[in-house]
Length: 166
Image (cartoon, rainbow, N blue to C red; front, side, top):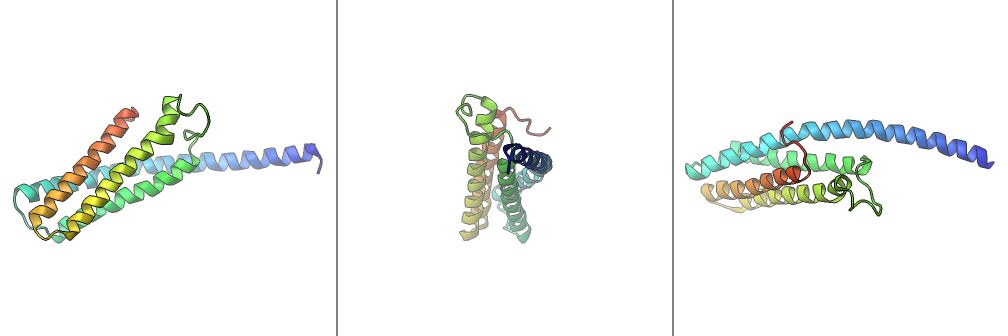
């Protein structure tokens, strides 16, 4: 194959691949952006119902368990969407200038680390609550871990200057 033909095929292949990644990036970014509201609402609902259950000494009902579980599942789903987004995002870069640029540093390093910390907190809280017997203890542990997780998420978004509810 001549160098000209090789260059032409390489250029065409690159353009097709780049356009597919651009479309994929836009779709996954929109999905990630929309799904954050689902996660936020479910985690907030879990926090509120656990606080009311803890302070009101209410029983730990199947509805409480389902809300906590759906909050956990939604956070993990958001993580999976985020992993795909991380792989196709032009904001994620691995070069000498990554740490010098606040935007690329945030999306390449800071954002996903903070979000994984939050998801780990949610997972630990849910797991610990399943092992407890007393309903007040279940509510308390969910409230503590989910609240810390939501504070980590909000803190990470504020640090990246990303609007939390826009």
